[in-house]
Length: 189
Image 1 (tube, rainbow, N blue to C red):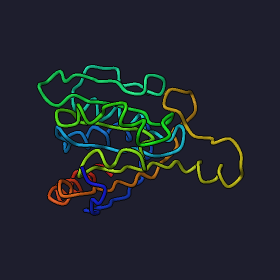
Image 2: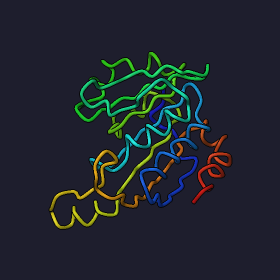
Image 3: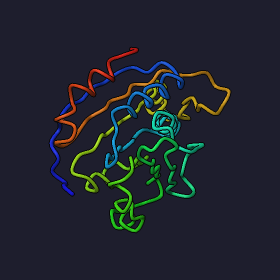
Image 4: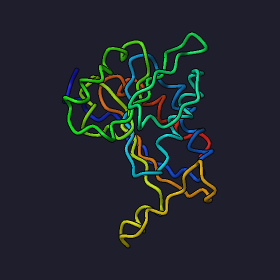
């Protein structure tokens, strides 16, 4: 466990629809192995759960992968002999001590762990991790206007809105896999 992981790569891309966000998650799943930690950040409705659903589909886990806000963490077993998916939500957690109480590190070595709202709370669980920030175009405008967030929820009837996704690989795991990751993330732009 390391709090001093070094940045290995950063890539930013525009994702036009929730379907494309799920597709990006599927491509990310192709890079992920047991022991990987993925930390998702973004405002409410930005697409964190949609990305996690794509990761779950790409890992071929038992689903459905839904927002874990009220249960905090769910384990989705692999249906294909690969790693399980641990999908957690740190929104209601206020400290690293509360994260420790979840025992996420107990499954970390054998699972891919995806934590929504985990920025600043869970990075120390692994020596390497992916940090993924998602921002909808409407978020910046709504924040500036102090109005409702105006973000498209993939489960609502609102139209899709483009998002900007920034993916940063931290630590040796992602330094070694940076070229492969950048290649996979550059496809299907």
